[in-house]
Length: 248
Image (cartoon, rainbow, N blue to C red; front, side):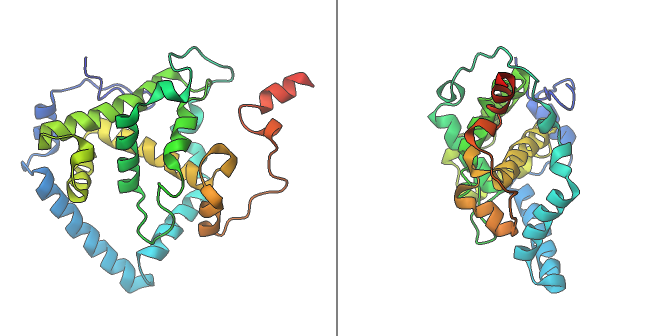
Protein backbone atom coordinates (compact mmCIF):
# COMPACT_ATOMS: atom_id res chain seq x y z
CA UNK A 1 0.00 0.00 0.00
CA UNK A 2 1.30 3.44 -0.97
CA UNK A 3 1.02 5.84 1.95
CA UNK A 4 2.49 8.91 0.27
CA UNK A 5 -0.24 11.11 1.61
CA UNK A 6 0.04 9.77 5.16
CA UNK A 7 1.19 12.78 7.11
CA UNK A 8 1.54 12.03 10.84
CA UNK A 9 1.29 15.65 11.87
CA UNK A 10 -0.98 17.19 9.26
CA UNK A 11 -3.47 14.36 8.82
CA UNK A 12 -4.03 11.56 6.35
CA UNK A 13 -5.93 12.61 3.20
CA UNK A 14 -7.10 9.86 0.90
CA UNK A 15 -4.44 9.02 -1.66
CA UNK A 16 -5.26 9.33 -5.34
CA UNK A 17 -3.25 7.55 -7.99
CA UNK A 18 -0.08 9.43 -8.92
CA UNK A 19 -1.40 10.19 -12.40
CA UNK A 20 -4.69 11.51 -11.02
CA UNK A 21 -2.90 13.67 -8.48
CA UNK A 22 -0.67 15.02 -11.24
CA UNK A 23 -3.70 16.15 -13.24
CA UNK A 24 -5.33 17.61 -10.13
CA UNK A 25 -2.26 19.53 -8.98
CA UNK A 26 -0.96 20.39 -12.42
CA UNK A 27 -4.01 21.20 -14.62
CA UNK A 28 -1.84 22.86 -17.26
CA UNK A 29 -0.11 19.55 -17.90
CA UNK A 30 3.34 20.97 -17.26
CA UNK A 31 6.22 18.50 -17.28
CA UNK A 32 8.88 18.59 -14.57
CA UNK A 33 11.13 20.45 -17.01
CA UNK A 34 8.55 23.14 -17.78
CA UNK A 35 7.72 23.41 -14.09
CA UNK A 36 11.40 23.97 -13.39
CA UNK A 37 11.58 26.65 -16.07
CA UNK A 38 8.61 28.46 -14.56
CA UNK A 39 10.11 28.09 -11.09
CA UNK A 40 13.48 29.32 -12.32
CA UNK A 41 11.89 32.31 -14.05
CA UNK A 42 10.04 33.31 -10.88
CA UNK A 43 13.18 32.73 -8.81
CA UNK A 44 15.27 34.90 -11.13
CA UNK A 45 12.73 37.72 -10.93
CA UNK A 46 12.68 37.51 -7.14
CA UNK A 47 16.47 37.39 -6.98
CA UNK A 48 16.73 40.48 -9.19
CA UNK A 49 14.34 42.37 -6.94
CA UNK A 50 16.23 41.29 -3.82
CA UNK A 51 19.49 42.46 -5.38
CA UNK A 52 17.98 45.82 -6.28
CA UNK A 53 16.51 46.41 -2.83
CA UNK A 54 19.18 45.22 -0.42
CA UNK A 55 22.23 43.83 -2.11
CA UNK A 56 21.25 40.33 -3.00
CA UNK A 57 20.32 36.85 -2.00
CA UNK A 58 23.27 36.34 0.34
CA UNK A 59 21.74 38.88 2.70
CA UNK A 60 18.26 37.50 2.17
CA UNK A 61 19.12 33.92 3.15
CA UNK A 62 20.80 34.95 6.39
CA UNK A 63 18.00 37.38 7.26
CA UNK A 64 15.39 34.71 6.55
CA UNK A 65 17.01 32.13 8.83
CA UNK A 66 17.72 34.65 11.59
CA UNK A 67 14.14 35.93 11.44
CA UNK A 68 12.88 32.37 11.96
CA UNK A 69 15.11 31.98 15.00
CA UNK A 70 14.23 35.39 16.41
CA UNK A 71 10.52 34.68 16.11
CA UNK A 72 10.94 31.30 17.76
CA UNK A 73 9.17 29.70 14.82
CA UNK A 74 11.29 26.55 14.86
CA UNK A 75 10.01 25.65 18.29
CA UNK A 76 6.45 25.85 16.95
CA UNK A 77 7.01 23.34 14.16
CA UNK A 78 5.35 19.92 14.55
CA UNK A 79 8.64 18.01 14.52
CA UNK A 80 9.64 19.56 17.83
CA UNK A 81 6.48 18.25 19.43
CA UNK A 82 6.86 14.76 18.03
CA UNK A 83 8.91 13.35 20.90
CA UNK A 84 7.52 11.27 23.75
CA UNK A 85 8.40 11.83 27.39
CA UNK A 86 9.69 8.26 27.64
CA UNK A 87 11.24 5.78 25.17
CA UNK A 88 8.85 4.03 22.79
CA UNK A 89 9.10 0.70 21.02
CA UNK A 90 10.67 1.01 17.59
CA UNK A 91 11.91 -1.48 14.97
CA UNK A 92 14.98 0.74 14.49
CA UNK A 93 17.57 -0.10 17.14
CA UNK A 94 20.68 1.60 15.74
CA UNK A 95 21.58 4.15 13.08
CA UNK A 96 22.63 1.26 10.84
CA UNK A 97 19.06 -0.07 10.95
CA UNK A 98 17.57 3.20 9.76
CA UNK A 99 18.88 4.00 6.28
CA UNK A 100 20.93 2.03 3.80
CA UNK A 101 23.61 3.50 1.54
CA UNK A 102 21.21 4.29 -1.32
CA UNK A 103 18.72 5.97 1.01
CA UNK A 104 21.48 8.08 2.55
CA UNK A 105 22.60 9.22 -0.90
CA UNK A 106 19.06 10.36 -1.68
CA UNK A 107 18.84 12.20 1.64
CA UNK A 108 22.14 13.99 0.99
CA UNK A 109 21.12 14.96 -2.54
CA UNK A 110 17.76 16.31 -1.37
CA UNK A 111 19.36 18.23 1.50
CA UNK A 112 21.89 19.76 -0.87
CA UNK A 113 19.14 20.89 -3.21
CA UNK A 114 17.27 22.51 -0.32
CA UNK A 115 20.35 24.07 1.32
CA UNK A 116 23.26 24.11 -1.15
CA UNK A 117 26.91 25.04 -0.68
CA UNK A 118 26.57 28.01 -3.01
CA UNK A 119 28.68 30.57 -1.18
CA UNK A 120 25.59 31.83 0.59
CA UNK A 121 26.25 30.36 4.00
CA UNK A 122 27.14 26.77 4.91
CA UNK A 123 25.25 24.15 2.94
CA UNK A 124 23.68 20.97 4.23
CA UNK A 125 26.77 18.85 3.62
CA UNK A 126 29.04 21.27 5.48
CA UNK A 127 26.59 21.26 8.37
CA UNK A 128 26.64 17.46 8.45
CA UNK A 129 22.85 17.59 8.17
CA UNK A 130 22.67 13.96 7.05
CA UNK A 131 24.27 12.65 10.24
CA UNK A 132 22.13 15.00 12.32
CA UNK A 133 19.01 13.55 10.70
CA UNK A 134 20.21 10.05 11.56
CA UNK A 135 20.68 11.15 15.17
CA UNK A 136 17.11 12.47 15.22
CA UNK A 137 15.66 9.32 13.68
CA UNK A 138 17.53 7.10 16.13
CA UNK A 139 16.04 8.91 19.14
CA UNK A 140 14.09 6.31 21.16
CA UNK A 141 11.62 9.03 22.18
CA UNK A 142 10.66 9.94 18.63
CA UNK A 143 7.24 8.73 17.50
CA UNK A 144 7.88 5.66 15.30
CA UNK A 145 5.11 6.79 12.93
CA UNK A 146 6.97 10.03 12.24
CA UNK A 147 10.24 8.17 11.74
CA UNK A 148 8.53 5.82 9.29
CA UNK A 149 7.02 8.77 7.40
CA UNK A 150 10.44 10.34 6.89
CA UNK A 151 11.94 7.04 5.74
CA UNK A 152 8.97 6.25 3.48
CA UNK A 153 9.36 9.69 1.89
CA UNK A 154 12.81 8.74 0.66
CA UNK A 155 11.24 5.84 -1.22
CA UNK A 156 8.53 8.08 -2.63
CA UNK A 157 11.15 10.46 -4.02
CA UNK A 158 12.88 7.50 -5.68
CA UNK A 159 9.55 6.20 -7.02
CA UNK A 160 8.70 9.61 -8.48
CA UNK A 161 12.11 9.86 -10.15
CA UNK A 162 11.49 6.50 -11.81
CA UNK A 163 7.98 7.52 -12.88
CA UNK A 164 9.09 10.84 -14.36
CA UNK A 165 12.59 10.11 -15.67
CA UNK A 166 12.94 6.34 -15.70
CA UNK A 167 16.03 6.37 -13.50
CA UNK A 168 17.13 6.65 -9.89
CA UNK A 169 17.04 10.03 -8.17
CA UNK A 170 20.80 9.98 -7.59
CA UNK A 171 21.32 9.42 -11.34
CA UNK A 172 19.53 12.66 -12.23
CA UNK A 173 21.61 15.70 -13.07
CA UNK A 174 21.36 18.83 -10.93
CA UNK A 175 18.66 20.46 -13.04
CA UNK A 176 16.58 17.28 -13.12
CA UNK A 177 16.80 16.94 -9.34
CA UNK A 178 15.73 20.55 -8.93
CA UNK A 179 12.84 20.02 -11.34
CA UNK A 180 11.71 16.85 -9.59
CA UNK A 181 11.69 18.47 -6.15
CA UNK A 182 9.77 21.44 -7.56
CA UNK A 183 7.33 18.93 -9.02
CA UNK A 184 6.69 17.02 -5.80
CA UNK A 185 6.08 20.21 -3.83
CA UNK A 186 2.81 20.33 -5.77
CA UNK A 187 1.81 17.16 -3.92
CA UNK A 188 0.59 17.16 -0.31
CA UNK A 189 3.06 14.45 0.68
CA UNK A 190 5.92 16.21 -1.11
CA UNK A 191 5.36 19.59 0.52
CA UNK A 192 5.00 17.97 3.94
CA UNK A 193 8.02 15.69 3.60
CA UNK A 194 10.33 18.37 2.22
CA UNK A 195 9.32 20.80 4.97
CA UNK A 196 10.28 18.19 7.57
CA UNK A 197 13.66 17.60 5.90
CA UNK A 198 14.26 21.36 5.75
CA UNK A 199 13.31 21.75 9.40
CA UNK A 200 16.00 19.28 10.42
CA UNK A 201 18.52 21.11 8.25
CA UNK A 202 17.68 24.25 10.23
CA UNK A 203 18.17 22.29 13.44
CA UNK A 204 21.56 21.06 12.20
CA UNK A 205 22.40 24.69 11.49
CA UNK A 206 21.76 25.92 15.04
CA UNK A 207 22.20 22.88 17.30
CA UNK A 208 25.23 22.36 19.50
CA UNK A 209 27.86 20.50 17.44
CA UNK A 210 27.79 17.75 20.07
CA UNK A 211 24.56 16.55 18.43
CA UNK A 212 26.29 15.86 15.11
CA UNK A 213 25.41 18.94 13.05
CA UNK A 214 26.76 22.49 12.92
CA UNK A 215 30.30 21.23 12.26
CA UNK A 216 33.00 23.62 13.49
CA UNK A 217 30.15 25.85 14.68
CA UNK A 218 29.79 27.04 11.07
CA UNK A 219 26.07 27.66 11.49
CA UNK A 220 26.60 29.84 14.55
CA UNK A 221 29.41 31.75 12.85
CA UNK A 222 27.32 32.40 9.77
CA UNK A 223 24.41 33.68 11.88
CA UNK A 224 26.72 35.59 14.25
CA UNK A 225 25.14 33.58 17.03
CA UNK A 226 26.79 33.20 20.42
CA UNK A 227 25.65 30.14 22.40
CA UNK A 228 24.93 30.34 26.08
CA UNK A 229 27.61 29.44 28.59
CA UNK A 230 28.40 27.02 29.92
CA UNK A 231 27.86 24.62 27.05
CA UNK A 232 26.13 21.35 28.01
CA UNK A 233 28.30 18.62 29.42
CA UNK A 234 27.79 15.04 28.26
CA UNK A 235 25.51 14.39 31.24
CA UNK A 236 23.30 17.33 30.30
CA UNK A 237 22.94 16.58 26.60
CA UNK A 238 19.50 15.65 25.33
CA UNK A 239 19.08 11.92 25.78
CA UNK A 240 21.28 11.90 28.86
CA UNK A 241 19.75 14.65 30.96
CA UNK A 242 16.72 12.61 32.05
CA UNK A 243 19.00 9.82 33.22
CA UNK A 244 21.13 12.36 35.07
CA UNK A 245 18.10 13.90 36.79
CA UNK A 246 16.67 10.50 37.75
CA UNK A 247 19.91 9.59 39.52
CA UNK A 248 19.71 12.65 41.76
